[in-house]
Length: 471
Image (cartoon, rainbow, N blue to C red; front, side, top):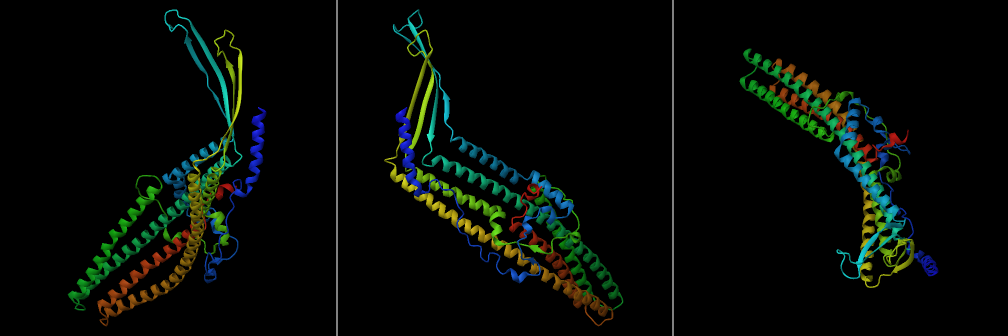
């Protein structure tokens, strides 16, 4: 036993000389460049509050205030299959992490054995036989002086954190996708209502044209043109209805239910934040689940490299056993067996393999570092794109409103002039088509503003489980 402990002490002394190998060092975040990550935010000062506040830190119920939409999001968070799968992956990672923690404890095994022997070779017909048995309890403990077990545990923890970040990313994406689908339905409903109303109006125009023909104020060509125009509008209605049905089916699938009609409110009743707080770029490191997942992937690669380094050093294992035995077949079995041993395994012939594994691990670590920085850049691009898209569509909406006002006056004027015989139906048709196109575009522009807010909220890491943790 003295030799065992002496050898252990010597090994521990040797381990202190290995600090330069960084085997025991924890992962530290590398320097990341977030300068100008959101680009020129001063160009959108009308909607941007440039301070440390961040709409991504708000609960999703504060962003999406429609009660029907909130119920749909809650249903999705409870039932969505992708989110359930992500949660199960986290459970699997937690089990792996617990297993890595248990690796620090000694393994204990009970290994009872029994045997029978005969000196005259006849066990069945009264031959002389002797029974012997042992009931030892054995224990084995790997002394982690070179960090292999420690880094395996840290690697498993990084994988667990990566799994949790992925779960949050799925949750954030799910909330944004449900909101996007809901607003898409409202937009299509609005466009369908405008188209149906226009179809009725144009049908009335056909009747007016027929009456004017009977009065000799127009000809058959104008009547036919008005009828064709009316049929074209009527033909667009089934296409919109098809889009509505397909969007409902897609949204139903997200909610993990059979395709069905989706209850919803009105497009004109929707309200979203007017002032958008994006915070500072460094907040992306803490808020974006995909950025967190990329960093945990880098941490796992770092610990994998440390594990590859530890393969160059010996494994030290202390083992022992204790138990009862009648190994000599004596009547009195009360004999106690005790044993202890220390084994040291030093790799010799697999040096080349260990060098190759270390090079591969270092390369994977560099790849993970590049992916981490690229993920941050992608996040900054998404914030910049969504923020500018919101401002651009607001500017478009203001101009679109003026365009619609002008086109409405044009339609009224050309219809009046046509009734007086000083204008042709072609001028009326052109004004009506332009007005319908502008009205549909106005709805689409309003929808794009909603999409921009959703995209910005998503890009800033919104939808995390912050509403629960803040209580």
